[in-house]
Image 1 (tube, rainbow, N blue to C red):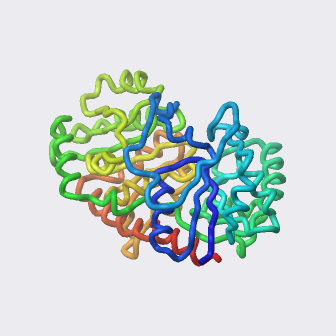
Image 2 (spheres, rainbow, N blue to C red):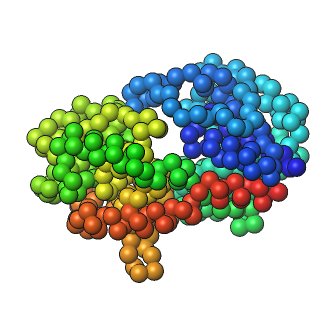
Image 3 (cartoon, rainbow, N blue to C red):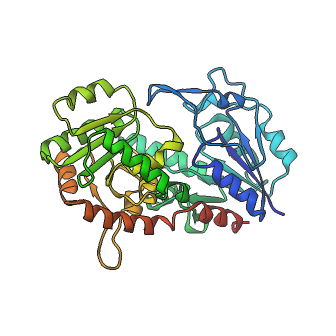
Amino acid sequence: MKKLAIITTHPIQYYAPIFKLLAERKNIEICVFYTWGKEALKDKFDEGFGQKIEWDIPLLEGYTHVFLENKAIDKGSHHFKGIDNPTIIQEIKNYNPNAILVFGWSYKSHLKVIRYFNSKIPIWFRGDSHLLTQISFPKKVARQIFLTWLYSHINKAFFVGTNNKNYYKQAALNDKKLIFAPHAIDNSRFAPTQENQKQAEQWRKELGIKEEELVWLFAGKFETVKQPQLLIQAFTERKKEDEHLILVGNGHLESELKKQAKQNTTIHFLPFQNQSKMPSVYLLADVFLLTSVSETWGLAINEAMAAKKAVIASTKVGCAVDLIQSNQENKTNGFVFQSENIQSLKEAMNKIKSQKEAKEMGEISHQIIQNWSFEKIAETLENSF
């Protein structure tokens, strides 16, 4: 059986289920090397949410994993020197894999692995960067030179979507090295169930929302990059009395947002909800919006689509070009608006005029997202040997 060493910083709710699935399928053997160290298991203060976060779904069950010693003084994935594993090369050698899959290069140890094993063991790479963020010309040139050098060490790169593929191609990776492995979530976990629907209905009643009223949803960190203030402004200026906006989360903009929405009784705030509650959160609404000015992918869009919701995203959301689309009858599951443009956002929202329309769009969302699954990723990795 072929052996795959997986190098990643810490257990993440979007990747751990893939590792478990690969182990269950038994087509290849895997071992996940967590480079943050056991410190990654402690409750971490999330600056975006402004509180300590511990995910309430299991992330270490069903697959082989190792927590490497991390000697970094300031440990973490927030900077290059925060991941520094003195034994990582020897640990990988001891495992003796047929290939090494590295998640992200911008950490000291990850880059060391890529450089050391180049031409010794095939290096596979996965990331979700894109070219949508504007940078100065000198920085663009410097980045291109560095990335061309970096990816010359890579044997295969798994791109998550169109924008990610364009990023790799600009770094001189040819099509033979590029393999599509879609960005995905656990679609079945977010599919509507009676229990989750019941909880959502109860929530709506508590918020004073009538059954027939159209509901818009934002769920995430209350921070500038997510642009919740733009959404509140767009919702308020549209002046629709039979519609509601729900914002779920916390963050440094919270008091400012509540002040902005103070005069509007159809804008509601709910605090951060952990992973087990998120399937019900999406069922609160008819349309989910991701208004970010920078989002490498935007897995919340995947989740909302799995929950059968219409979606709206900005042009700076990496997944928008792939996941917001039309079917054969020229019906769509959502709309894309020009990032930071209030008029463009209002126009996108105005295109969805009723619950009935939103529901039809949500059904299309559900059909589209079935092709973006953990099973597709697992199958791609297995077939890449």
